[in-house]
Image (tube, rainbow, N blue to C red; front, side, top):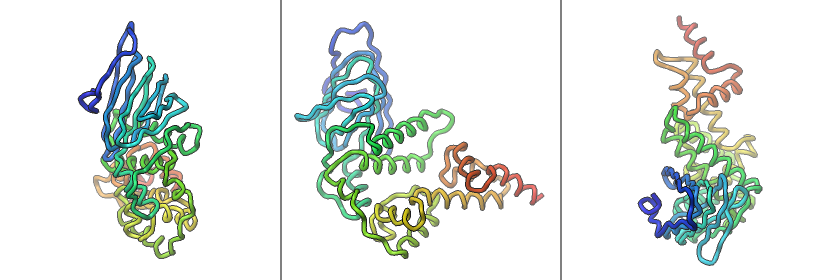
Length: 305
C-alpha cells in the first residue's frame, strides 16, 4: 500500500516483533485525501516529495515525523505540518494509529487567495509544530473526526455535493489552524463590502442553494474577498454565509413540503438541498419551523385530499 499508492522508498520494522498487523484505508476527496494507518509494530518509513501539504492526527500511540532538518513529535496532543515538496520520514512506535491529511498545495493557495482577496504566488510556509489545545486546531480535529464518522456510515454513501462541501471546510479550517506566513492577512480586519455586495451574495446563495458554497464563488460574484464577505454577513446578518445558506435551504425545503408532488418525500427534499443526514435535517427543520418535516408533508397531503 505504501509503495504502490504513495511511492514509499522503504518500510522497515525497527525491532523484532512478536506480532505484525497493519491496517490502512485511503480516500481521495478532490484536492485532498485522508489516510488511516495503524500498526502493531514499531516501524520506519520514507515517503517521497509530493506537491501536497501533510498533517498527521494521532488516535493512539506516538512517534516522530521529520523533513529536512526539522523533526516533531506526533501524539494525541501534538502534531505538525510537513510542507509540499519535502521528503517525509516516519519513526512510529508500536501501536500507533493515525489519520494523515494531505492537501494539494496549489488548491490550498487558491483557497487562501479567495479568502484574502488576492492571488497567492509564493508558497505557504507553515510553522512545523502545533498543539491541539489551540482552539482552531481543535476545531480542525473535530471536523476531521466528523468527516471520518460520515465516511464510516455504511447506511448511505456521501453524495459528491457533501464531499465537496467538506473539502472546502477542511481547507479553510486548515489555513486558520496552522500558523503560516500569510496568517496575519487572515487575522487583520478586512475592508467592509458595500451593502449591495452583500445583497448580491445573498442572491447568489439563493439562486445556487443546491450547490456547495465556495469562497471563490462569493469573490467572483461580489468582487470582494471571501473573508471580507464572511465578516460582512456576520456584521449585517448575524450569521456566517454557511449558516445563511442553511436557512435558505430550509426555507426552500419547506416550500416543497407544503406543496408536494406525488413522489415527494422528506428524504428526497432533504437531499435536493444538501441535507444528507436525515436526523440532522429533521432537527434543523424542527428548530426553524416548530415541527418535524414529516408533519409538514403529512398536513399538506391531508389538505389536498
